[in-house]
Length: 112
Image (cartoon, rainbow, N blue to C red; front, side):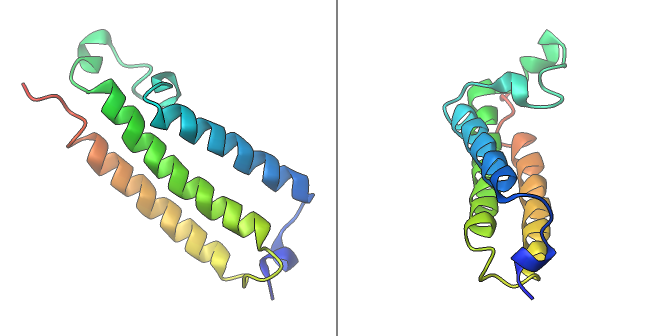
């Protein structure tokens, strides 16, 4: 059983989502797009001063790029990859989110 056997919906939707994720990753990696980071964009100006915004964007963008790359691999090679790769994608996504959370609360904080 391959990924194509378990996927629902037209193929163009997966390509569109991968393209949108890639655009977001590039925007974040460029150091812009802090307004896309949930929690940061709604925090008070005093709370925002505690973080290096450019570094926070780059950490988040790096994680988004990893998730985008996996999604692109799954989309392009869905005829070849086994269905179990969906579980790998889920596990890696959770791992990337945990790493982003840890890094954003350690290396992205400004030193007092």
